[in-house]
Image 1 (spheres, rainbow, N blue to C red):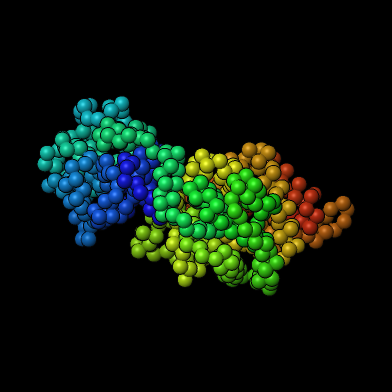
Image 2: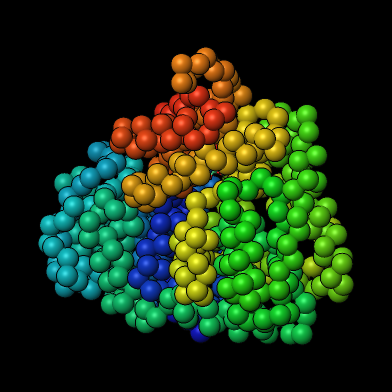
Amino acid sequence: MSPNQSKKDTIVILDYGSQFSMLIARRVREAGVYSELVPWDVTPATLSNLNIKGFILSGGPASVYGSDAPTLPSFVVDSGLPVLGICYGMQLLANYYGAEVASASAREYGPAVIQQTTNSHPIFSNLPTVMEVWASHGDNVLELPHGFMLLAESENAPIVAIADTNNHIGIQFHPEVVHTPAGTQLIENFLFRVADCDGKWDSSSFINETVTAIRAQVGQGLVICGLSGGVDSAVAAGLVHQAIGDQLTCIFVDNGLLRHTEAEQVVETFREHMGMKLIHVDARNDFLTNLEGVSDPETKRIRIGEKFIRIFEKETENLGDVDFLVQGTLYPDVIESAASGNSAAVKIKTHHNVGGLPKDMTLTLIEPLRNLFKDEARNVGRTLGISSEIIDRQPFPGPGLAIRIIGEVSESRLDILRRADWILQEELLRTGEINNLWQAFAVLTNTKTVGVQGDYRTYGEVVAIRCITAEDAMTADWAKLPYEVLATVSTRITNEVEEVNRVVYDITSKPPGTIEWE
Ligand code: XMP
């Protein structure tokens, strides 16, 4: 579903392949202005339902003179709307208006200092005359384009910021990264002093307009949503429930691979607190039987994914004439799949088969979060009143604990892992360390070691602790937790989980490791 967004002020960002493109979109939204990141060769028709107040051209790795270099679409300059070109975006503007762009004699990667040459342009309002910025470019604009004036220079690039009287502005540095300390102010200057945006976009306005759009889309139809216990499906379901109440039925398939108390929490939150119609399918035995004798991680994923699909299909059939299916797709997934033509990704793990739905399902999709980043979805969830246990939950893989048990999965091994993991969570919560982590969990290795407990020889399980910090799950580092916290976790696990006599801490970053062990 694409809610009708014709009313709100929107900044359209043309993506030229910079690693920071998504950051630009986030910074604009953080300032209270809705933004969309689109491929640079987007057709104007695709944008026709938006109330566009300005364009931002992202940076990118190309050189404007390279063969097949991405270009500046003429509808952008012809629109009469403000345009902010960042880095490659500035070079495109300069080139479009006839200036020479060439490989720089001194390339700039990293910190640079720029100096304003005129202090009268609104893009530099409230900014120091000399400021630190973060640059990353190999080409320079060599002369002022036709009709442009110079706004700032730096030691390595005499033309570092330019503007014309039609609000076409170019900057040869990245305001979207934290290493440009005044970057947020500069972006806000563009939004509010140049593009005249109203800054009224927030989670409440998003909820209002989305609820209206869902009602219009669904009419009297029936809607289903698979709940996993994770943030995305929870918030998506919450929004749809707010819009159409009991026309929505949620299906929660308990696969028996969840953490301690998790299944109960899902049922309590959605059925008791939020009053949703919820079908709770206890499929624990089904999943476990299906995993008997399976040690290979990919086979585990495939078996769990397939089983989920079969159960979901059966439950949907039982409901009768269902018309719509809610999915918690987020904006990064949308952008990623739009860009997937470029990505030569090698398959490391089949993440997305789990919780995936039958390809031949003929239901119409409702994806109310498809324009939101994860933290924005969390804010919407909070505004909807969904409990923080669900909203602030760490990412948890679809195949659940099955990929945190190395080797075969069994009820007894699940039980050992759950108890060890619970102790870890308790200690991280008690010490507040959990707030610094992206994910933290225990892994049941398939190694046994000799120990001594109460003067007796033991031959017990080895539990590994994995605590990581990350900005996103693409890369990660192991967390430098205080020794005392690790010591308490180790002592408690070996004392309280009798099957375990050794605890090890995983000190591998990603890469070379992955976050999960399987
Ligand atoms: P890795 O282990 O690839 O994990 O570094 C990156 C992030 O993805 C989660 N993950 C999964 N999520 N199905 C999922 O839905 C999966 O099969 C899966 N495997 C890993 C992992 O927890 C981390 O957040």
